[in-house]
Structure formats: structure tokens, C-alpha cells
Amino acid sequence: MVLPKKLKQAVRDFLFGAFYFDLYKDTLKLARNYNDFVYLIIFGEILGIPLMSTYYTLRLIPYIYGDLITWKARQLRERDLTESAPEIGV
Image (cartoon, rainbow, N blue to C red; front, side, top):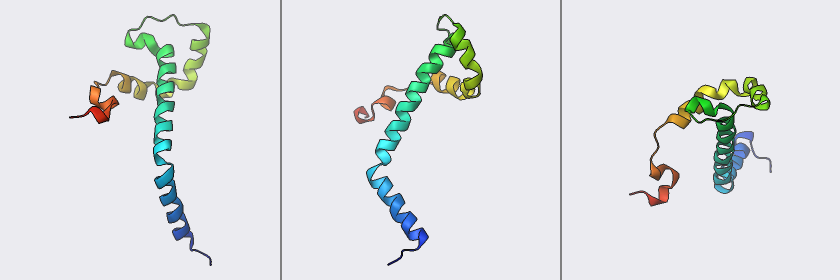
């Protein structure tokens, strides 16, 4: 029995969502947190954190300069305690 392509893709997407979507979402969040930490080390002085810029961090700037605007907006956004721990929510 040969399934049509759309049905096969729909079954594949359903199984991915059922078994792996939470793991995928958590992995993306963890990767973003690691990137934020690296950006904090490199661009920390923009936020007012006195870090010594070394030769190596200055060499990394051209590679991550494009992400500076979104990173800065994400770091300076006001946060609520319930965002990081939704199970505590009211």
C-alpha cells in the first residue's frame, strides 16, 4: 500500500509533534540561553557591565554583529518572574 505524499508528510508531522516537539522547543531555548551568555561576554559594555574586551572578543564581533539588535532588545526587555516559571503562575 502506497500512501500519498501529503498523507505521509501529515503523519510524519503528527508523530514529530507528539513525541519530539517539547524536546525540540527546550533545545532551542537552551541554545538561545547559551548564545545570550556569549553575547553578554562580548557586548557586555553596551548594557553597562564592565568587562575587559580582549583581542579574541574583538575578533568575534564581525560574526555576531547582525544579531546585536535582537539580542539587545531581548536583554533589556522587562521580565516577570512568572515567565521563567509558568507553573508558579496565579
